[in-house]
Image (tube, rainbow, N blue to C red; front, side, top):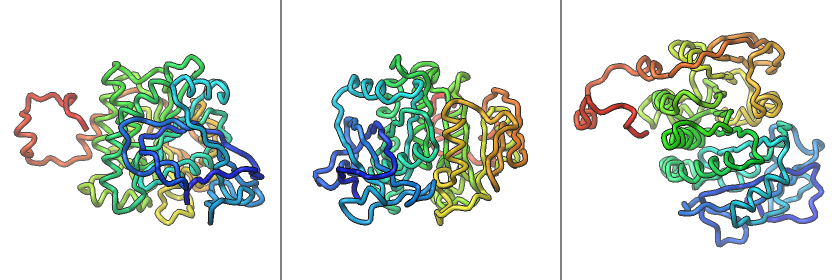
Length: 383
């Protein structure tokens, strides 16, 4: 169901967002963008109307059943305006900033343009985050049979996303930036940050917080990405769940290597390496979800989205004992397992390179290994 413009909205509240996309515009007036790849990015201002609490529960999206949607009971797009320059984007940010905080969201696999718009609106609304919301939506064909196309689309979009972050970081009205990504979108986010660090010698200083929800990233590759970002990295928070069926399928088709979003952070070698790296991991395995794949818990749990809005997007780490995470949620902060609602840890900065060594059994050199030779520095290999 496309985000057809609805006027005269009577919903309970609204979310104004800036949307950057590397998708091709649609010729169909019933939708805005397709799942195909555009050589240039597009920028739009979008307003989403959200029904009142009478018609919805926190964590849920009331998808339109027909067009036009009913804004009283369903999510509806009430305003769309194309912006034609960086200055237009900066003007939008000045009007919508709250303390200079920017939250940039990257969606995951199998998402239409409108899927990402409505889901991000739900997260912003339910989290209560006092931020200027910015969505980056990349070309997904929104089909379970197009996994490889979607994965290549994240690679295709790395420069566009890096440029989006770079433009934000240069804006004097932006105080700090939180990057939040889900599923396959975490690959795009982390690769773009790594790419930025390689170009500039570090990730932009204003990008001080990165949240990875159900990251569909090979753990060995993440270890390399982490190392190649250099020493001045943002604070990372990762949401994991061992019952994530989508990541189990991804592991099956990806050489049976564990996905980062499905690890048990209390197990070795993960616990030790997470502690050394100072990475915060929140285990949602015991959290109940309406998602049969258990892949979207971070957005559907009221406790989790409130945690995102009240602490994480403002740069606060979970390093005190005043954090109540709700029933069934275990916090693992820098490798220290604690009881629900009681979190304490220390943060020690160190590379995660041992993770890729310990998690992977020795194997015979591949044809590629023999071609490169033992003198090729690992830092020159691109993932």
